[in-house]
Length: 221
Image (spheres, rainbow, N blue to C red):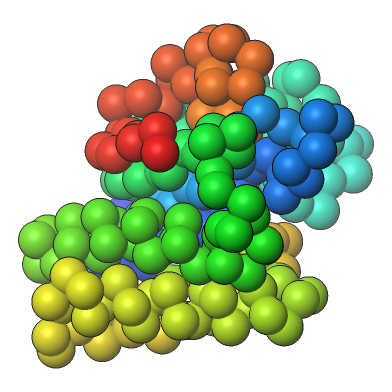
């Protein structure tokens, strides 16, 4: 309790936006029907992340070897517990996503860097504006480590374009590429993106219903 009381719950004017994707860029029949890009925005002091950190070490002390959370790979009990924590802290996060039905995408736009850049620009236009409206003066966008250089450049150009198109002068931003295990924000984005993907791809809204109060934007394009 003492540790909790010494941490201020006042959010800083610097917004963090964590990105994750679900589905794949395979346009063959064997590929997924949908491709979903999700952002989760939060501010320090990251109360949700503190509770996830506590839960992780509770698991370790009880004998579970867990390095970081990954929704698809986590055991059912872990998945339920993480969603419990996310659901408890929905007022501390904002979720935006773009849902792409791949059959509707023109062949010229199906190359990974081009499609990724278009999706990101569309997504961040809404997410950045929302954070600015909530008083942010800086935004730090963090993606999972991106091994393909062209895809990394697509991320950077899409953010620059979103700032320009949405007339957000004076908004300072940085783009960082970190491994998902390095920040709970990326792991939360993974969980939220997985839940949204299950809803669209499989018609299973069980997990989505637990986070939907924090979903601010979900266009199907």
